[in-house]
Length: 318
Image 1 (cartoon, rainbow, N blue to C red):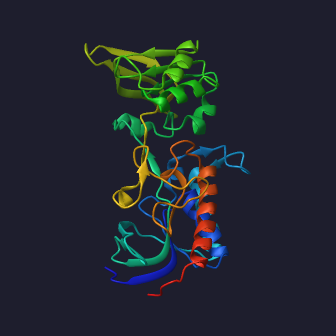
Image 2: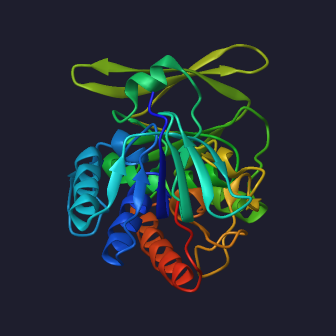
Image 3: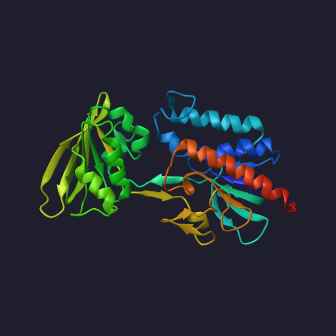
């Protein structure tokens, strides 16, 4: 195992659209950044098949887009390292990060771009049909289900918003919730109940997603009544999991100010966190939009914020 220490003016942690875009801008600013990719290089887009909302590409495969972003950052001069940061000490400068590889990274400034992950139900059938009818992003994938029947599972604002949004495409949306009332804001619930395309199935949990394999695709779901155990089968072509997102903020949970269930809080209009010299971008900070293009925009902001901040502070060499 490598027992090395690497110092950089700017350490970027994470390799989705936010991280790679920060790498492009920071390299162009001659900051010679190091970007550590993490366990899932490319982030959530690597498990997304068709992306049809990335400006300039009518349709692009998620993994291909991330390969291009990585190549772009490298071309600009960003050093990209395949490692995973297991701990990060933000108590003093230079900041210190420990990699799984055994390498210690020290940095005068840090950009956190570790993203977020959709929460899943954890069913084998859900995993089997991910990207083939099972999704956690209505704004990403709703377009593919024009004129089809769709099922959404969840009971909070996210589930209600997704169900309402999906009525723009679907012939029918069934919202399944394991309780007898929703947690969503009342005004959202009113809109939901008034929509003629939406039907709510109360007191049910998802037992299994059913479908075929040639071609692979969802054909329906089995829902179990939480009290009686009775099974109901609902036909659908799309199944959307809307039980929330989990920001990947474990590294900084006890160091930075967080809000909205673990998202890193930044100063409005900037990417500055509660510790000077530490910046955050992308889904790690964003509980509202959660789009590749907004993440990339925040990655740009973080690099520019970091450049400006570093220019006003003396750097410490290793």
